[in-house]
Length: 433
Image (cartoon, rainbow, N blue to C red):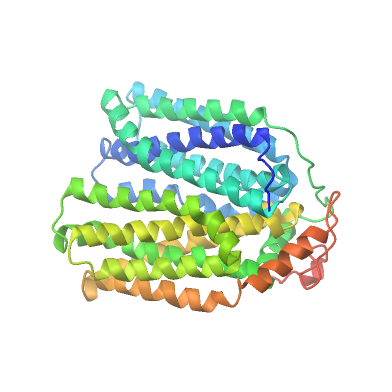
């Protein structure tokens, strides 16, 4: 079957997100190094790190409700401009040598809050731009994921370290410029029909309705549980990975960087073959297979006798993750009504973000009380258990039924409620908090 071409507007969105991802990669390396120039206190460094995660935990669902009320294209470019201004202020503070940990933490919080609004709006805008065509969504998300991995995982971090050597303000200004370029490109994107928000409902009630929509739909719940449980497992591994590489694999800093590069390379490959897997196996079966691959690869990492086997295991795991992160969001964008897209996307992301700290704690506790390999074994077993549990929730039959309902749903402004799905327009069906 011939798939329609991606619209011209997608190229501008892809370029905007690629440029922005490069800036994110620059800051991913520069921000912790910048914090180290201010303090060596582990608790102070932890405050800066935690500040970047708090917006998703505090405002994830409410942010999605706001995005569903606002024009998504305008939300994206205004957020980019605001983040550019924030980084310019931070660069000025660094230039005049008045930068401190409290300011750094505050900016990290606000940048992450901006990322919440931008990412949620972009997730909701893409299906409208592509007409909710599943094949187009898979191709588009594969290209976006591949570019994001290359820009933020390969190109950005080395550039961030190099720019920081030129001065503390330099990487901050570079990231600010990336946001300005992204804002300019997003501002030029074509307008899409905007779902009409129900002004009679409070923001909190709309947020709860979006969360309820996820938890009452088995397919959407299965799609949300995979990254949530996956984050527990992967953070448990990440917590001990550097120590495992040093003590058990006998590799230093450079070798550890190569291990992470192998994982990123696998992620690129996985994103590239995601659409093929979806066509050959069906999206539901492909998601189950990629999740199984991730679990088996993590167990392979735990048993790795040398760095070469460990690198191969991480590459395979990265491939599974890359494919999963294309197939899952593409399916969600194809089946969720437009007026709920922001809330559903932010609810799923919030679940994943909330799960991450538990994974870090689990990894540290198991490594302390048992052995350095134990968190990795536990992560592999957790991933395989999660796969078994969610396999019945994301079957090909469920996927095809959801796609068929979405294709027949009329949505001039707000769609009619789907059969078997919660009617989010009825407040009595929203569970009390």
